[in-house]
Length: 204
Image (cartoon, rainbow, N blue to C red; front, side, top):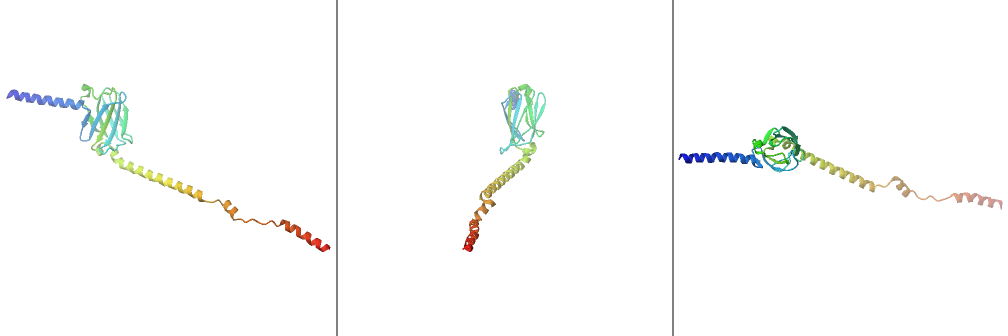
């Protein structure tokens, strides 16, 4: 019985260690705040992160912090939820979003993974965007601004179209005067000939 007990304990410990190393080497990490996948891609020492919620909507203006064996580096996602930064160091230990840990590899220095040698590409899906992203609070505001700009653009196009139609249908005042003014008869010749006729009649 003792041998069996020792054997079971050994198997259990080996399983725990193996699971721990597998998590450290796995390109996937699932947590309560976010699910993270990563792959080697890009340029040496360059880290690219795409941050979105579970509906696939990008999370903008979110502060990210990357920890390497050399230093910590801050960068912020753009309107598409993307962020890219060049880091110094050999391996990446973790990523924080708005000062909350979403990715961690405590044994990175021993496993050599994730390595910065060939660049890293991270895809982070936030389960709790309200906790790890400012983008969760401004996303609807951004959509409203886009819709408002679209309405203003359509109104401006409609106004310009109406102005063009009004200009094409209008007649200039000079054209109207030319069309309404009747032709005046020339009476100069009649006025000049009348006195002459009278004079000739009087002399006879």
